[in-house]
Amino acid sequence: MPPRPTPLREDYDAVKVREAARKSQDGSQVRRLLTLASIYEGASRSQAARLGGVTVQVVRDWVVRFNTDGPDGLIDRKGSGRPSKLSPAHRAALAAAIESGPIPAIHGVVRWRLIDLMQWLWDEFSVSVSKPTLSHIVRAMGYRKLSARPRHHAQKPGAIEGFKKVSQTSWRRSRAKRSSMSP
Image (cartoon, rainbow, N blue to C red; front, side, top):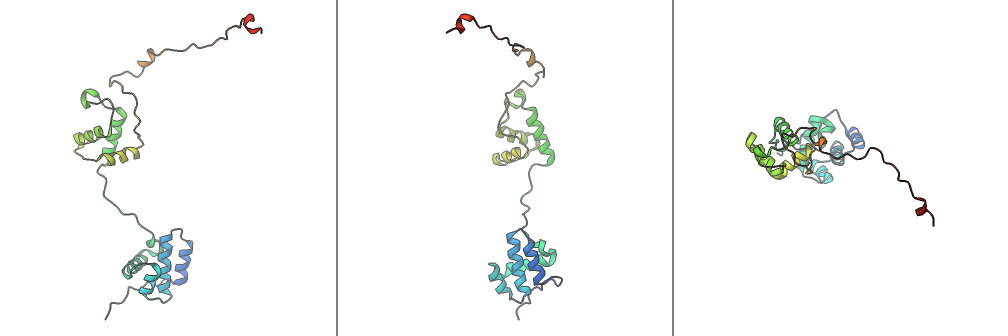
């Protein structure tokens, strides 16, 4: 004797499921809801699977998700994926290192490159991150590959202002000579 199919929730019927499908903005959810509505109307699971363009096992999974969470259970869920290698503390330290810039005597570089930051992360935290991954992390933190001119780590903030040349504060119009203006 074949196993009985998982029954659908009793608090819904075909009309309510179609109404939920009408209100939905997610195409995949609509397809799933209409497939389940056909089951409520008496279609077999294999007929519903053909209608939804999936296998009977997938329809069973949809029924289980629908029974658990209702129509919202049929919305595509994002996979959890692999957790990040960098914790929030690592990211904060990385941002501080980028902001302060490298110290040439200590880090051996005058500006940070991704490969230098990879080495810095390994030296500081023993965390190995690939170059593309670090590029994504740094861009997500709001940094770009543009770099400022290198500056000495002990430079005083106002020291540059004393060496800048200043323009004249007021410009005067030169008097035109009458002879040059006549034709």
